[in-house]
Length: 327
Ligand SMILES: Nc1nc2c(c(=O)[nH]1)N[C@H]1C(S)=C(S)[C@@H](COP(=O)(O)O)O[C@H]1N2
Ligand SMILES: [Mo]
Figure 1: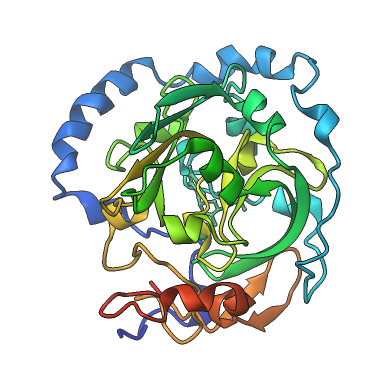
Figure 2: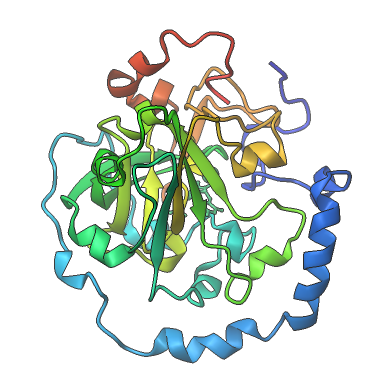
């Protein structure tokens, strides 16, 4: 594994990417150029035109489901991150590549919001996300979250086990993977003008991973409906994997027998793999993964294998050979 020469530990800029030039030669540059010139024409004023809507008071469609009952099965080994940090220091590239995208994210329209289930399922369907959530067994769980950029947080999510969603979707027995897609809306997502990225954001899990007890669909955080910047109205949470697997603002769930290529893997396969399980002993090519900065504190603590969730998940990987499980 490559070791870092230039970056000394905590000097790293907390951004997956250092340079757009990574992509100059990529084949999707061509397709992106066309989209980019259209965006350039209409850019700039998009946020201004929607801010009045975002500020209009209206009851949240699932407000009555909060707070949900805490499931005590997942106790933390550390203090909860303060809400103000977890809801203001966010990765959501659709709204920009900085951590400070809260204002931009308020332009996202949450109603109506439909999720499409397609691919290898008994019957394809399009459902209203809030109707769907109401059919699911809501609970609250506290989980650690470890970003590949070596910062971490510990937060209470509200939502339901992804297993319930898989049961609801009724995949065919031949389906091996679940592929998820984020909303791609040029009118409200200024980050999409970064046309060299392969939008929409895509992530994937094996069916076995998706039905693991830990795998969670989050619809809220800190006992409240999910803020837009954290991935409203529904996002994935896989706490044993690096944070980029936890795809936000999902609009499509596809069952397939082919391994999906996820967004970061498409961008830079030498740095971000399909499995992305947390491992302190496998450095990222550009920085170490041995420790993490705890968001909202001055603490730097050792990172744990599978982010400390090995008892739940390690068995799934014991027979997998010749795969980069930790990248
Ligand atoms: N659609 C989408 N999902 C995403 C991202 C993103 O940029 N776009 N960033 C990922 C990364 S790198 C992390 S660490 C987490 C951050 O979640 P948080 O902002 O709620 O902490 O979201 C993940 N899900
Ligand atoms: Mo991340």
